[in-house]
Length: 436
Image (cartoon, rainbow, N blue to C red; front, top):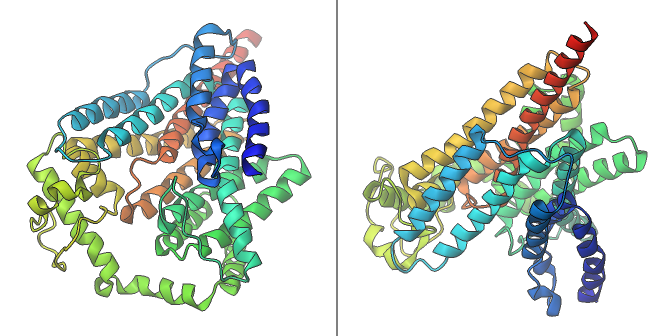
């Protein structure tokens, strides 16, 4: 039944994609994030949905006319992304032998970066930026609402384990936390009452879905996002009261097992799970010390083929006492994952993309102060994007999630937003000159 429903859906979406390059681009994004293959078990499970819409979008990009499409011009974010792509190619080429997913992961990253590099050309006005945000919400929010409803229906007994696309429960919690500030943004600017009710309802359900993951990192991400949003809110008292209300509902719905697990956060040094992560960080940093420029290759930090070579090497964390390692576990940190896989240079480029995004955020905040009313939407969107990236940086500190598409899309979306603000300000200045 699911396959038939998706087949019918595709019979509508494919012609829609052929109708306009930007629609194909949005469907490319949707297909990549919604991960239909994770929910299908019949013939439609093998359909390469992302590739279908990506191919349509790329063809239309060259053969169709679009008066709103801009000429591609380099910017700080795109330049760093190009360097990440080239550096990743070298790292994959000179990687240690026996890395099962080396070229698969590089190819995935390269496809993501290609998608992002096209964004400033295509997301060229406020409506298109808003449409892209909606697609991200619909894609990621689908997973959260589905799991949240299961949690409610089970009376709090449902335990979310995640989906193949994102990984385990901790990865899934991070993804859900990242989408929450975007939902709040759409709620604030939606005119239709049904859309507003849908936003606030899905927000609450996704919060419950985060609880259902039983993820401590998810809780830390929620706290970080909440604090950030309150700091940048014009109604801080209302924001604090809203957070307290949502927190009280979450605690009322949470089972005792969740409360007990969250209390273990303060006992990190005695937590074997956390100390096992530190052991993996040592191993990844040891790989980087011996391969500072290119690292060991994609997923080198957890590769059985080189595990014994680096198992007992302390790397840059030799000052921390950790238990012995007995098997090649995942690196469990976006920062150490990049460090071990792509070396110190790779980590520098990764951090540079995050820093540039933060600088773009501060730039947007400064520019929109001049036009507080006209550009309030851009100001608020930049806060939502930065909050989502903060969730990635906080939750990802203990997760192997450096190659997820979502943060790279948000980083480039911040760049596209900044470019749009600059165009709006330039247009306003031109109008003033004409009036004078």
